[in-house]
Amino acid sequence: MQKVAIVTGGSSGIGKSLVLKYANEGYAVVFTGRNGDRMAQVATELGERPFLALELDASDKDDNEKMVDETMKKFGRVDVLVCNAGISMRALFEDVELEVFKQLMDINFYGAIYATKYALPHLLESKGTIIAVSSINGWRSTPARTAYSSSKFAMQGFFEALRTEVMTRGVHVLVVCPGFTSSNIRNVALTADGKAQGESPRDEKKMMSSDEVAERTYQAAKKKKRDLILTFQGKMAVFLNKVIPSRLDNMIYNMMKKEPDNPLK
Ligand SMILES: NC(=O)c1ccc[n+]([C@@H]2O[C@H](COP(=O)([O-])OP(=O)(O)OC[C@H]3O[C@@H](n4cnc5c(N)ncnc54)[C@H](OP(=O)(O)O)[C@@H]3O)[C@@H](O)[C@H]2O)c1
Image (cartoon, rainbow, N blue to C red):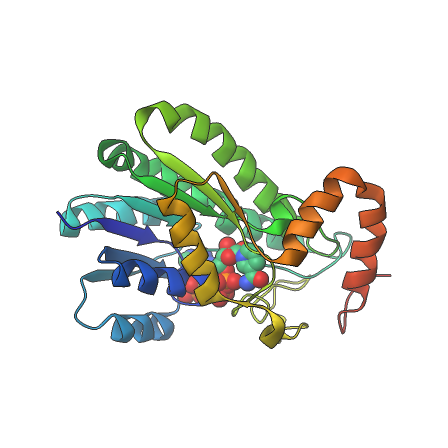
């Protein structure tokens, strides 16, 4: 029986690379997103391989139910759920509109909760895998990313608890924390009033590729790893945050202050 992987936010970046990786490994893939043009591009790259592309909003509870229902109708099982859909932000908390803050939590956190809620019965049946795409910001927050960091800390709290609820019943939970990864995320990151910032403030060419994140994620899931923390800088941030958190406050402030047009004072 062919295995089935669902990837939320599969139209670009890490999610798109994961869709292609799971398809190359012989899975039927289901992916969601809101941008029809980018989804059509992924569909073209998938060609004749079995897939289902669903234009759905990750932050909508009913859309997540539909995602799982449509998967069951077409493929009859769920073996892997990747909670990947996410957006970022760049604004000081004192400036950011609360609606923007809520939007981040709705997509990044509640999106993962809804998808997991509806897929879990099928994952318990298949003894499948849940992959939560968090961030180094799920271990260590950065300034001007309060909503983003909050959403990733919340995700990690949720999946840590869920892991211990399902581990005796054959469901594996992997939390992936990418460091800076080349993708579309910084182009569409929201500013204080909810508009996309339009351009990445960092050199995307110097970052880990989305394909490498997908490859490392696939291998970590196969080996039933608990956590995957990526990039040397990311590993250092997690380590230094444990041993010298207040020095890291200064280091992170100085690093983020170097970004062009940063809102830090
Ligand atoms: N890139 C990094 O440096 C980095 C670092 C750490 C963690 N991450 C995490 O990696 C994940 C993927 O991000 P990425 O870097 O690959 O960014 P990306 O290229 O912008 O991709 C984000 C994906 O999420 C989808 N998405 C966003 N909002 C959605 C919504 N409301 N409903 C459905 N789909 C939605 C987007 O699809 P549409 O545009 O079609 O809606 C897109 O497919 C995120 O959870 C992010 O937090 C990224």
